[in-house]
Length: 438
Ligand code: HOZ
Image (cartoon, rainbow, N blue to C red; front, side):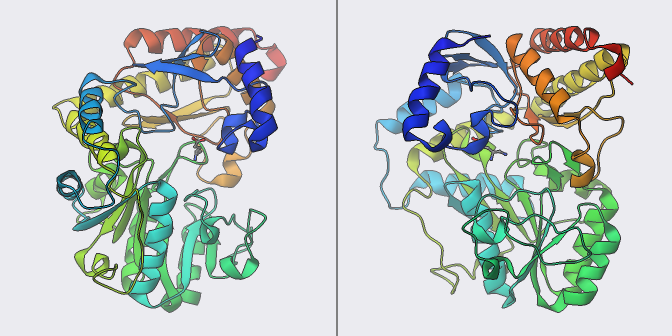
């Protein structure tokens, strides 16, 4: 399909913006073809510059849990705009936002608002180091915690090795304290703590990883992370930028708490849904640790747009909608029906496929079984995913343009949207040559 306005815009963009985009995955490099330039969005859909409508399963990479242009959110934002865009001074809505977050996430006793998930995770690392007086951090291969230097590290495959940077421009010395382990690998976790436990400031994890598609940390793994952090005096940090208010009202941590009595991380990074589509994120945790932040303590962190009045209006209106009775049950059911529908369609055609979902977040793989770590995710047949992606795009269904990304369903997606999506996928699976099927 030629999308002429998108193609022309992409050409113009590439002359002035590196790769033609302001965030790499949007450039379609992984899947090939021309990125769709978005003109407008409403509910579960967006329209591209050529006027084509797509069912949107990205939702701005997570924030749009209510769908686009929810009336209550629009009203709140329009009202806030009239009072000014930014003050650089405290406001009542920041207090309300803090009160909402503390009420909904029991592990958070104090919270600070920032403007992006990267800022939240970067700040949390500094805070953990400041609070413990230690330098080393643990992260897991396939977990993406934003693009700050210390966190841009992939794993070496060796046991308990220190990582090397995955981006040019990150000096090796900056990541020398970042220990990278395999996700869901208990023995590596044990070994890392037995070797370095007293030097570790924090362990940071995406409890349901949305940056290697959709992979869950097992309950025993999370439980052991908690126990080892407590034993060695390290802080357990949940990166819930993606999962916070997305997989459940209390985030992924509330789901683990159902299986691990009393479970709480020490610190949590939040983003995406809490801004409702505006640039807002947050980090919070126990009072004792959060009080180490300036101006109370010695860990510096600041931001001109932090707690921005329009972002807090948008975020608060969103948080109020998602607390309405039955919101998550309906969202989870709709998301599950997508995962199940796609799996059944693939199975009828004999195509290897599996899918998983939690709340309004999902993932699918052209694999026989759900992967547990990055290496298993990498076994996906990437050309087959790319063909699937383009077939769906041509049918008006917009999935993330890379197989390493989770998908998102909003409250605005209807049963009809899910049925249309499954029908398009079934058509694609049915025409695959028999030799590519199981
Ligand atoms: N960080 C996102 C991928 N997991 C991409 C964000 C964007 O391109 O908007």
